[in-house]
Image (cartoon, rainbow, N blue to C red; front, side, top):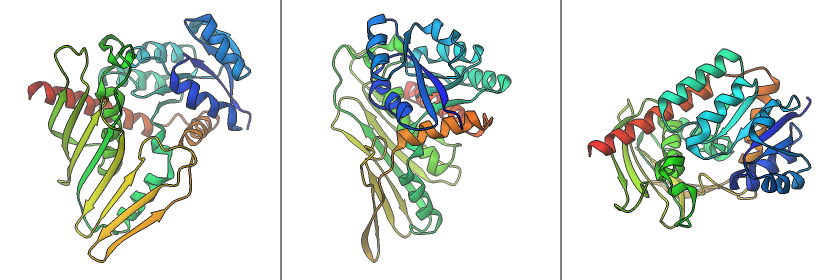
Length: 322
């Protein structure tokens, strides 16, 4: 199949470090243009990947751009995803798709109406380690699932980092909290009830710096989640069942050469399953290209994005009540 010709709306770190290299490396996509508010930054990044440098509106008007990747700050996602869909472009948008469920629902409806692919860029969902954990659970290796826990925390960010700005959609919930929320949905289903939530920070902070959430599934399984952006690095989850437990480190941002280790414990002792390395970024790009070329916009990924957006709103509301 011909490579999907992709334009990149913004020069964010995730675009420079992960997504643009993947777009250039896989054989099903090809970066053709990079846009920035700064002509110099666009030119530098475009030169590194052999593509054109341009402005945002000009990129969306280019006939050689079939799809766009949107890594702008979270509060700007809705504006530029909407503009790209109206321009007839397929869209891979950085997570979270928007900052609230209303906007997410509007964009999902617009993509469906126009027959375009719209995907939220949770790369970790395309890593084979989670499917392996799900198979062990389904095969009864843990017995009946009783509880789940997950955490994603990162060290303190520089004072001028955009994730400290409320007007750009910053804060720990949208930056790192959505990861444990999304993996809880992966294992427990989309219909999760928020039992309790706390968003933490100090009065001088414009956004929350951390938080915790307790969820319950329709089957009564409890999930305890933690997240933060002024903590020691942690990226892990664990499933606890009636007959054993499974834990996984480097859950959300493993390097492409990382060999995941699933640790299982039970009455008979413990064992480790070492998996082959997997490149979740390349897998994500390939999956997006396959949806574009296959003419399969697909409702299921958008249902997942909308369920997550509603859960984020529920967490905010529960934390406000608390």
